[in-house]
Image 1 (tube, rainbow, N blue to C red):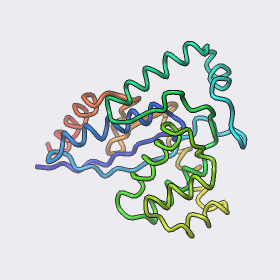
Image 2: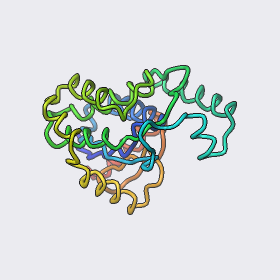
Image 3: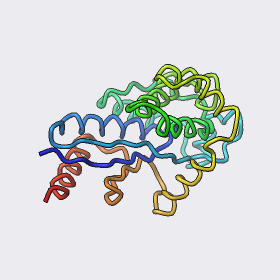
Image 4: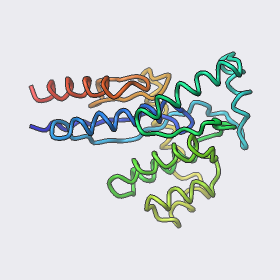
Length: 220
């Protein structure tokens, strides 16, 4: 018997561990085919909501935010790259270069959720992660956002209209606030059936075991 699970993947495009976590979750769901049917939604979280236009040098940013040295950052970047490879995500070996504001990317993800076809929000999320972490493209750039949204099948005129306005801004901020009030302070945060939380870029085995247990409880 297949259990239907609502999965809210709370994350930010600028978060490398979110790419790792999504890849691991996808692997777990693949293994659980026939046992678990996922209703997957991507929810907004901004690691750097005050990031100004043009972004900031990534080394400078991480040093200011965490006090880490360039050497330590390179070590962590390589570890994340290896974890990404395990789940089929290819990080750019040289890193991202800069970190950007991601608010408009979250608005387009909400557009895909509200008006897109099944699977389009998921496809856009993966496209955004690949563009930024795989090719160091700016998720702040409207040109990049329009191209990626169009490639996954969203209406380009609709995308342009959203980017040229403040449409969906209030809705994104309301969702962000809801998850902050729920106690989420870091991402990825994977919320199952509005009750169970799996934090961090866990290995596929951790997601698989947790989802299997939650599915069994849902069927009991």
